[in-house]
Length: 97
Image 1: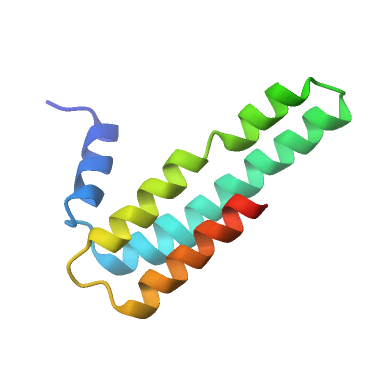
Image 2: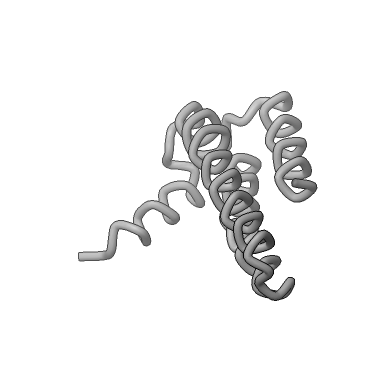
């Protein structure tokens, strides 16, 4: 039996996750909450005068997950152009913040 995490990533990469779930729940809801959480933790670390390298490392931990979700949306066979554009804009905003 394979781990649940492996199944989570495999289903999204292969386009077997329903597109509404992938876009609305995984990307816009869950990933946004994770970005806000990691950003908040990074700000707390800055307030505690933690070294910049550690602050940046914590803040950047979610970047691979964000990129994975956007690429999964782009790879999905039924992705409309507006959803591709929205996911790309979302990723740029996530990187900027």
